[in-house]
Length: 108
Image (cartoon, rainbow, N blue to C red; front, top):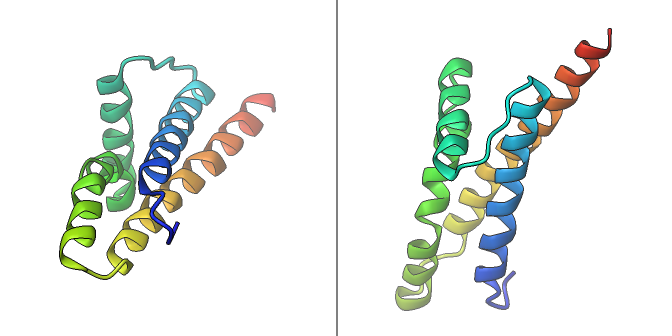
């Protein structure tokens, strides 16, 4: 990603977070389709779990494009972008893991 493919990275992380959120909801029998529905679901799940990264993940991604522009214009360090991506990636991993747990429990 250091070669400037930030737009592609942003799209991939948005898609991954959206799919992981929808999968988690589906593992509990809920079908999400609208963007606001998906955002609300993960915000509420983050609140329930007291997980700031999860709760704020879509809001963090909302600021990603602006942060990329600031890095390009002012030469800010890339560390901030990677920290944001790490937070969102961590949320995605938690969602997938929790979905697997939900599905395993449902099979019993």
